[in-house]
Length: 262
Ligand SMILES: [Mg+2]
Image 1 (cartoon, rainbow, N blue to C red):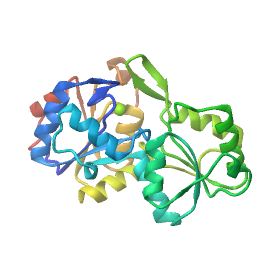
Image 2: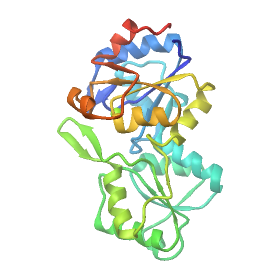
Image 3: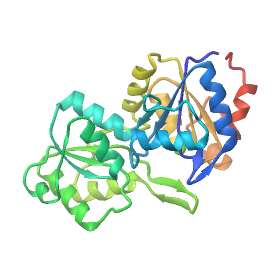
Image 4: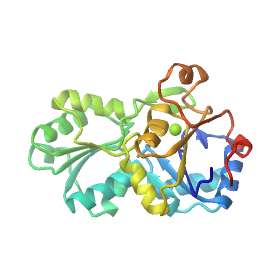
């Protein structure tokens, strides 16, 4: 088996919080010489340019914005292609707001949610509040298109698992009385479609640390997957899960011992 591209998750693969997984960086630098590498992340808190800075700091010296597909970027692109323009109320952080603005969207205020808002866009928001929840559910109840950048229940940090965008989405859905109209990030295939378009190939290997997003999403997009045990998934989780990756590694450097024809 030979792959033309590698779609690599970041949290739990390249780093956990501020700790960089050194061997992974080494492996990714080698993969870059063998195929097209794209970084796919459900985390919408940072913009692509902030990810590039983080990748450069981690030792991936060739990283540029063209290598990064965040759920925030994929969301902004999806909305522009499907709806053109509009006003979005954002439950999320600066990275998501930046991507929406760069695709030409207007950002709505809380007060706008009681008037007219075209979209409610939800990502992980470490300043999530009762007021934001109230505004978002009101806009959805008033007919806004409800978009989740992703529905990851948790997010890995050095302190352990933190609430992810899925926790915020669940709160808004409960208040709004319905779930999102569209989910962009893994395991939805929308983010993989964007990646395949950028890479110019569908012969790609998905590398990630989560069964419910990276591996499940790869399957939904018809791609092979490699699970690394450096992030969220523990060997016991893998044994219990019905979602099975094509490859499992303790350490990404072991990829070069697999029967992949680089
Ligand atoms: Mg991850």
